[in-house]
Length: 93
Image (cartoon, rainbow, N blue to C red; front, side, top):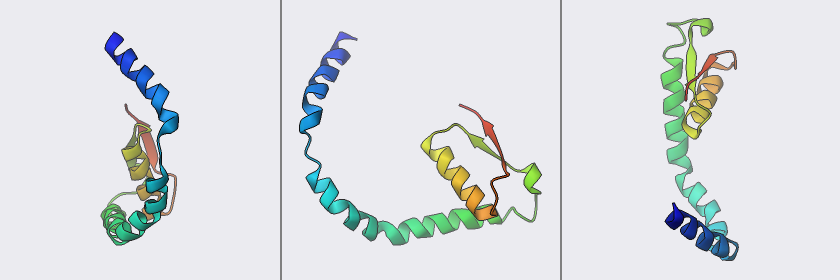
């Protein structure tokens, strides 16, 4: 535990000096370069969700939700694809 505290103290001393200029200058180019792939994946996920729309009533659907990044994205995709935020979210960590 002392080693972790030591590493954290070193980090805390250096964090304010981290130069993010390169990242800030290039993030827009990165987003633009990956836009088509992102849109493709998003559309595929939405089509998958929609493929179940006729098989189940909204009241019978649910999203397992932990509050993390993955379940937050899943929740967004389900709500967007189905056009409603009435899908039951069951918290599970």
